Length: 467
Ligand code: 5AD
Ligand code: SF4
Image (cartoon, rainbow, N blue to C red; front, top):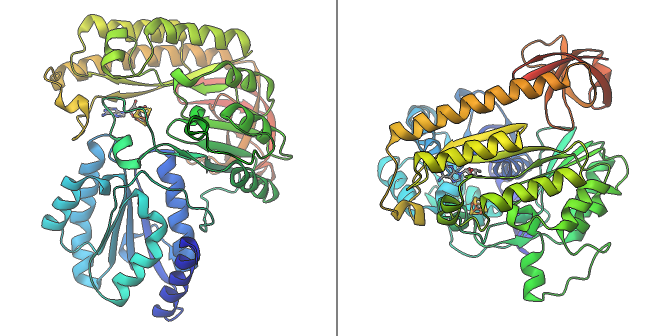
């Protein structure tokens, strides 16, 4: 019996222990879209086991956390939540399970065991698929479960999934990372790069297309090195629909009927080969917004970060892409205050931001991560300087957003209508190819369709449109 079949048996056993009654669960997901996709799998397993989701923590019989450890603030959030849950544990014996990236860090699991001994289940990134077994053991044997292993990582197919949306779906295409950027904890907690088989990805997307999904986001820590490790190791792939790289994967997905849009996060600039640029340019469904993490605009800092490109190479890549892909827009990630970064070096980051004119910039203050090279560097930057630089970058970025937004006014944009606007149920909300939110008046029947909207005004974080 394979691992997933075994877990399906555990799902049945949990249902039986619960005497087929419906219990309630809450789930809190921190971090990136890969974690959100993992949470959709956890929800899928829980619902097969007879649990029903609630947003009200007080009614929950099971509370689940899917953690992130990329920056320190996620830790504060988890420990705050655990403090709150202590009372619920005492009052009604809620089952508490914590999983994900943070559980791969020994200093964190040690702290939980000492300071929050009431937690029932701890599981890591490599044992997510074993959640039914862990839950069964916690319920049946009434003991604390710690299921964390440190391996390179494997791929498991066939887990149930409960998706958050009926319109947009995330599909993980590869897992792990081999790059070891010196600030980043991901390679330590998610293991080595490994790609899903093209057949499994294509079948999943064809099934999503049948269910009426319009937009697919391909996920991975380094999507454009899809199948690279396998190619380098000479692992034979019974090439499926001619897919042997990220570019060929994009082309194959582009052919799937009724899928309207394809997005992907995150690529690495060093792996942005010409075939990928060509695929974006020629595949009509691939959105022309590319997220291209910069991290720093200074060549020396980039070297210290182990990013494997220079300021000039990044700018040259952007130029090449802009030339080849009409209507290209770019977004990026930037870290300020990496160890040793001087004011002058930080100016290079501002310079790149000015030159590229990003559509969106995700800005982060450098956060020391135990076990990384960056954490061991001597010349850490004082908090106050990091914050000053962050604010300077934020001002520049916001000015650029206002300027860019103005360019939309008067144009017609193709928008995927996603639902009612959160702040006003009488309005609808959708997104442009470049991922801008557009709010507009229209009938609810339009939800899940593509509409051409005329943009009539701009408001920093959204645009207003008319049919
Ligand atoms: N400190 C701050 N930001 C970080 N990121 C990754 N590691 C750290 C860190 N230690 C940011 C990077 C990455 C994004 C997902 O998170 O910009 O692209
Ligand atoms: Fe972290 Fe760098 Fe890998 Fe991205 S490419 S996950 S930043 S180590």
